[in-house]
Image (cartoon, rainbow, N blue to C red; front, side, top):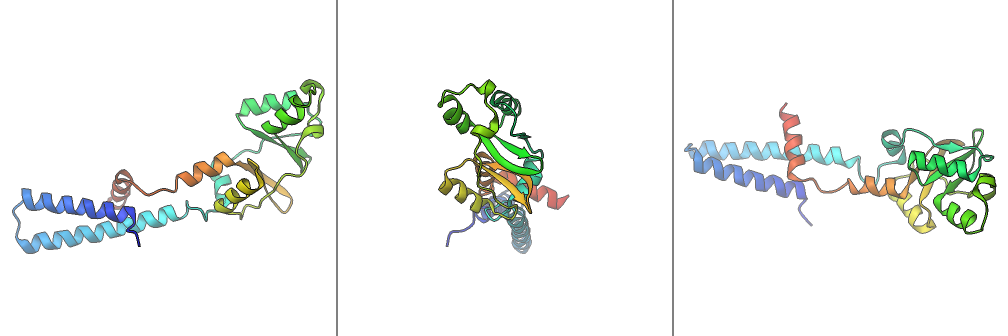
Length: 204
């Protein structure tokens, strides 16, 4: 079984610290030995703190957490809006898809792919084409209890890039493959700087 990265870093830091103490400070051997064990115990608690603080950011995190932190606003248009206006709003918000809402009901989504294949590719005039005619009418919808890993699996196997999130018929937001990738990439082995940061917080 591989040794966790943060424990390897902790051990390395302890070795360097112990060597420095031995080289620069002439202390009795029992004192140095106890100092080493105290540092080891401190590093153990730091590692535990990092483990639990990062555990919530892993693949088992639910989409509800992602929505709470990173996707605060729902961007939506009505089915009667023109493609031109919808694309203008998408550019304004720098998003690749727009929810299409008929009142409180999710009618569909309109994506960049729809604009390319169903509008421009079909030779339609975007200024005189309404979204309801070219939107994706049956998008894959997930619940806020869906995990990041499950959502990424759906994106991969369904070949979609945007997932509306809804619960009991209420739309809560939409996540993209980019949102999922960004969040999952953050779940990586800690480096020395994070270990030092957490250690500083624990000491404070």
